[in-house]
Image 1 (tube, rainbow, N blue to C red):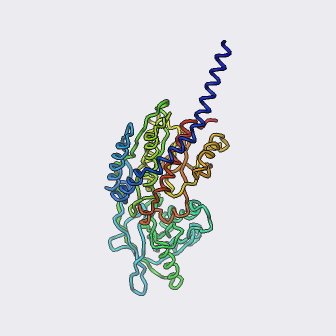
Image 2 (tube, helix red, strand yellow):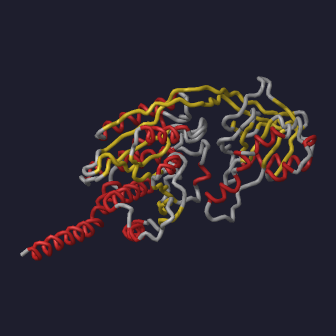
Image 3 (cartoon, rainbow, N blue to C red):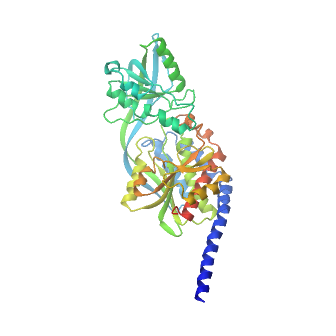
Length: 454
């Protein structure tokens, strides 16, 4: 009789497990069906882009964005919505312009300030241009050939690199580290070719790392970078005039956090998020308004479909990914101080185009569960779950033992829009956005239900 009891108990456990597995594809289909027929997040993204463009940390629009999204998450029915307050340096850009001095005339260029550029005097700065293609080329030049001049970094993204994120990483050192090196060698300013695969008139801004003082530094559109380079061949003594009006401040700001309580392990969190800030020159639709709304969709889809999350779903809209990455650091510090158990963290900050897959920061990609998850998502266009970084905002959680992941969509058009005025709501495709929302929700569902441990 005792043996029969254990046999029946074992059979029941196996049956429940198989039942759970057989229901999984149905839940995934339910997620996709709901996501692809709900325009709620898409409409909210339009509102965010319209009411709070240029929502860089410390700006009035950054606070408007937080207020808009806080109300939205409350209306979605999150169990808890709160603001995590922290203090951070910030940089406010008021204006930037540049002109070539050609035959005594000023030829206006398409430029924007890089953050956190120093300001120029009101009259601007004017000097000869020194064009270089790499930091190594600049390092090899004599200091006297750089002093008092404006360095022009003009290496384009490599169009033969298929993964544009790789091409970006190979070119972006000119923007992130070049201005500081130029200053070290005595330059009074710098210009960087926009990190953009296209030839167009949009200047693409971005962050610069200064350690010991700053100089005025701007980005120039790819079309104008070509024009300046050609003009320098005709006249190596060519001069440029730059004006930048910007200021450094310290501000109190917020991460926005919303929770949907778990049914079995409410003190463990499945974190999903994007960054709510955007550069001063853009609506930030793909970078990263869409990531924020895809993250809120995870909460909405769990709640609306009736799926039971074992762990609490935590949506975080991080402030200040673009400039100082202070929001991600602030949440990691908050988690450590309060012994928060973040089980898994997923970030969407790579555009809202057609889904491709997920990067997971794990050394064990042979985990059979991950392989099974990918098979379940393959019919929906998720072609890979591979090793890779989790993202800037969730990155600081790695030291706390959190498994990190980042969502990846088609990357070919992303850098045409990145950090520029071209990144506007009209570039968002509803279906592509919601396929991403459904993919993210499905991965969160699978990991929450079946865990990551083998």
